[in-house]
Length: 343
Image (tube, rainbow, N blue to C red; front, top):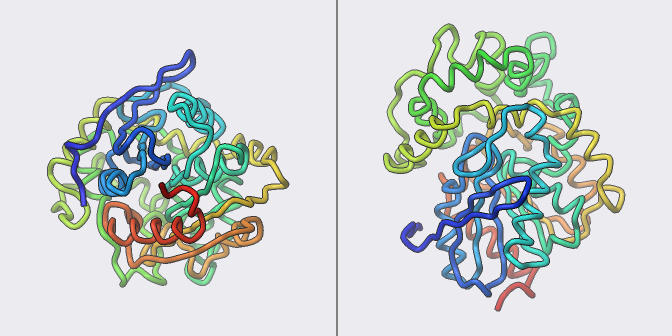
């Protein structure tokens, strides 16, 4: 599924920001850009880049701001969605392209959705994994309102599965310090495949405030066996090195701009409607970004005029856990909905 030797490393440098990105495939091929989320890197798309390159695409995966070899900032406000979108618009110009197919995951999803909403002329089509349109873009209070209260009684879980986001707001320094204490163990702990037994059960993220942190009273992540179905020892080392080098302040700061992001959302073009082809790939066993019984997908279904939805029997890290299924879903959708991109 992957051939990292065929992947190039490049930089897009402007007066305001530097984006490091991976690239594969013919430079003249149709452009597809993959945007990672928290706490990942461009290598999170290591199974997608060579696959789409082999199909003739120019496949790009940037390190987002605060990650890897891209610019890192020291204020929470530097991690607003509007700034990440601007980074991607500059990357597109650097690639000498007018538009692209954009694919996102986790926090990369609201970036990709926002490009489609605020810069529709730069978006041939948009596909996102796990996080539907007009969800996180509208802020934390909005997604809390969509929680399935059958699973998360309000008295017990006021913020539902999003309790961990409230914890960041209330205890940012301690939340970040516990991750910085051992990035290797933290990445090894969280990058795990989905579990069918999790369906209908409260997510671990709902326990964060109750436990006083990700690991209860512990100051760092426990050592657990690596999940070989999601990540190799080599990949784990690359994640740990990058996240250890910069720390988790930047990645975690993406959660600290809900009000600014919600205000930015109000300026979307076309009354928030997306008219280009859109694909949402839901993860059956993602109990945090849960879209089976919650109302999280309602705005997406209202505002996406050309929407296709598929689901994959996977956990949250689906591009790494189930790459063949993700690649197949993307190819089938593009062949049907965006045939003009095929050369």
